[in-house]
Image (cartoon, rainbow, N blue to C red; front, side):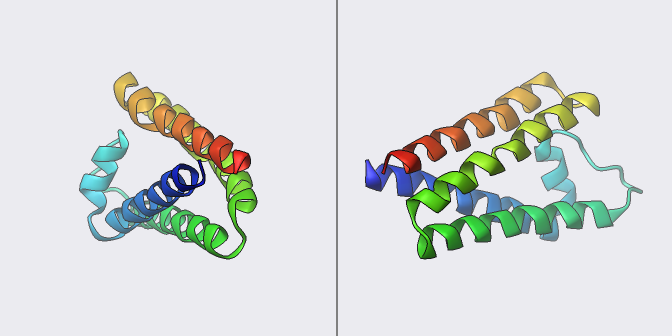
Length: 122
């Protein structure tokens, strides 16, 4: 159980770090993958903010697992699950598809909550 709990949490943290880096270096395609494409003349600052936010979430999750352990990582995952839940609403309210909202963001929230449960069980 310990290996599965840590493995899932590390993969999720690395994945959100990757998404953050993608928003920093390839913001257009990253926004399209998010479910709400960026406008060609839109403000790139918002895409940069998303990149920094997601990158910081990934680094913070990895740091908590490395230096504080499973219990701290579990609380982190539990609270950070609010972000993909909010992203679900953002996509739905801004013209994104239900498939992107539920298939990407809501599903991510569920997996993050599973990760939290596994870490709490360790």
